[in-house]
Image (tube, rainbow over all chains, first blue to last red; front, side, top):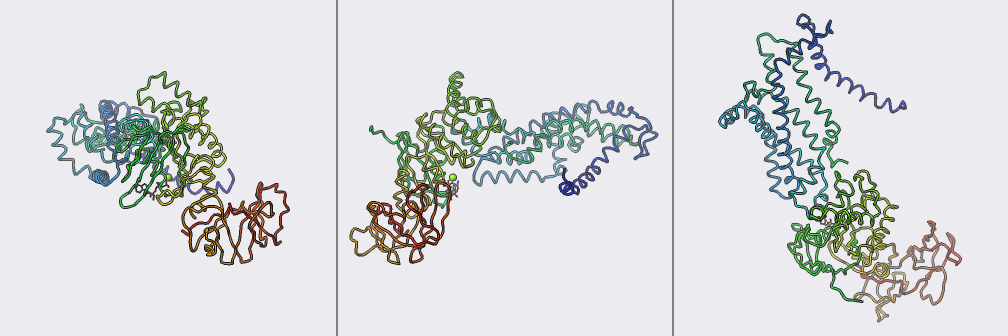
Length: 272
Length: 361
Ligand SMILES: Nc1ncnc2c1ncn2[C@@H]1O[C@H](COP(=O)(O)OP(=O)(O)O)[C@@H](O)[C@H]1O
Ligand SMILES: [Mg+2]
């Protein structure tokens, strides 16, 4: 690298390093804490004297089932919300005229309704339809709550796909539905992957719906279980941190799997 | 010559977008097997006319008949047409073969027939060995060949092409034009080709449809349109020309002589399209001037050579006439006569069949 280029990149580079350190610090502390024995736990910054894996055993013991619940809630919810977002985003991206815009803006208002406002009505609603403390109930809630954002996201992604692709398909005799399933959706891999990551993270990390709508081992996801660690009289930091780290793994794996497509999807475009 | 009904017949067609009149009074008929270009500046309504033919838009008034049938209310897939879009109309997640095969697959064509027809089409566009490439692995020129194959494999009577080469660079564009002519000859389809590039129109077309502000202003063979433009717009849009402000000579009953302000008489042997009177514009192409009086050259003027620009096969001379009017003269390389040098006085000559007298607007 020549020196002029090096000098030009030096400042942004150092800012990024500082930011990375700030963002990584809690994770590092969590990792260190999770490897300390109870007697060492109060020395937050220090390295553990010896690696104490017992925390992981305790953590897994307590949340093993809820870990599976989280997967059983997240995977179908993500698939359903992507599907709903794509299906409703498609006509909104292609429709001309004021009607489509009105529907679109109405949907967008859904994005600014905070969880807390619907929390209590939702509790009664879900209980009355018999889906309280069940995994399908969580699918329903997560999917419904994702409609505005997923529609918004997919509409904008589809709008960036050249309209001539649609017209070329029509003139060849393809129906609008055929175009959606055979061409648009398969060609939207990067957009769907980006949305899948955003949705996985949001649904996996959900705590509010979890504590409102689940109560037993049958359906409680990992976030609610971890919250339980902290609310007992004595906070057991070692197992808590171990549990937190374990619960991070699936989201990180998802991200690494879809990473390339994610960046492309966020940048928009039909994916060159 | 056998007389067949035109494959496209547009009668008194109009198109409004809200209160904006995009096309007015379009009358045009296109013969089977012709290459017709719609030529005009950006925004003159070429794409709109093409989309009316494809069925993506509907006429506000008037009728369009394709292959003898009125196509009011007929959706695109029911018309014997297909379209090559300017860019990006290929399906990025399919390979070349699947892109070309798509239309046939949708129509439920048997697999073996699809294979045959796609391979024949890929052969025609010379992409035989690219069948399994993805679209993002192709160059711009190759992508456009795929787009051509994709449209032609469906066997349309009429192929609509909307500025298909606009995104390519010059060299490839010129090559693709030659290819386009060959592919047209091999398939026998009627081509309706939209362009804003006069060179493309001249090279490619049997007939040029010149458009301005939503109207057709002239329909002619390229040579005719170049030699005998019917309006100032046509004279300026196709190629380069010298324009002289003049008035019709009152002493010439045939109405074929115009006189410039400084008294230069410009006589034309081209019968004007309409009656000319009062102020007019006279157009003479740069290559119509010569420096030597050969045969029965009828007209001449003298001036001073101001400037000479040499560009390979041709040279351009700027001649300043007595009254300060500047004339551009084009000389082909290899011309035998002695050529004047910058600063010298010289005489220029031209023939009356190269003088076009046009109404002022
Ligand atoms: N869907 C539309 N709605 C409103 N105006 C349009 C629409 N399509 C084209 N126009 C207008 O019609 C005119 C002609 O457009 P177009 O046919 O695309 O021109 P060209 O292809 O010759 O450049 C332009 O002024 C354009 O803005
Ligand atoms: Mg256009």
